[in-house]
Every structure is written in C-alpha cells, then in structure tokens.
Image (cartoon, rainbow, N blue to C red; front, side, top):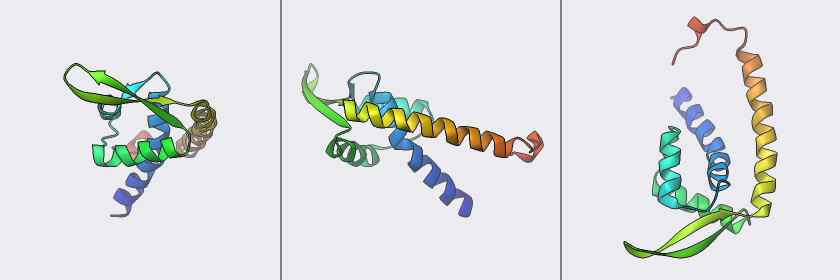
Length: 116
C-alpha cells in the first residue's frame, strides 16, 4: 500500500511536466496528448487530463484555439505560452537535478537489489 501511494504521487508530480513538454512541440489536441502519455506509460484518462489542462491554462501556461474538424464539431488545440516555456525551462533544470540525485542515491545498490 505504501509503495503504491508513493508511485502514484511520483507520477502525479511529473505529469504536469510531461504535459508541458509534449505541448511545447507544437499545438496539439487533447486525445493526442493522451496518446503521447500512454506511449510513455503515463496512463491518463480524460477525467484526469482536462482539469489539469484547465489549471495550466488558468495559470497562463497554456492557451488554446478552436479548429474546425472534418469529422465532427470543432476541436480545441492547446499551445504553450511564453510563460509556459519559462516554467518548462525551470522544470527541465529541476528534473536534471532530481535525476542526478536519484542516480547518485541508487549508485551503490546492486542490480539484483532493484526489482521491477
């Protein structure tokens, strides 16, 4: 139970970072964001993604535009703002620092000590 809770918290902590990274590549539709997250094994459902996108937009990190769709109603495409890029740059630095700290912390462990 403790391990599952920690795993959940770790995933939540990096989800926003990964979403900003994905959107920084160019405008993108929400279902495409979900596909990218699934590819990265960060499984997410619409019920998790949309509130997060709304929060990022309300914080000025994202914007969106509506585009007509050939197969239904208009679609909302997300773009990262300059403020979002600035935050992403800071998160990149934090990720590198955390990754370094974890790698150093794990360095003394034998590969047989680490189970998947």
